[in-house]
Length: 60
Image 1: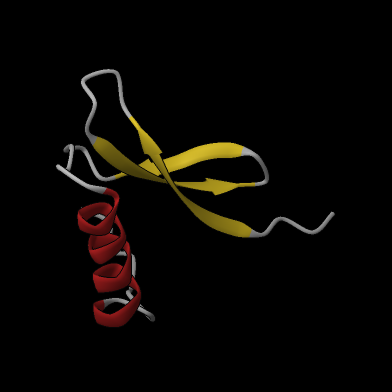
Image 2: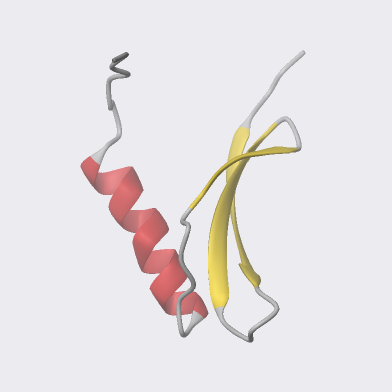
């Protein structure tokens, strides 16, 4: 089964925008904060892609 990760940007219940990441249809991560515009949420996703393309996982 091929599980592809996708980012989605959506409107929240307060009229703001948020981003989430889905893997195989399940929400696996979200930004935890709302943005005034879809551009703000898109900038956050772009920043993740740029600054953490190969991020390591650390267990504590």
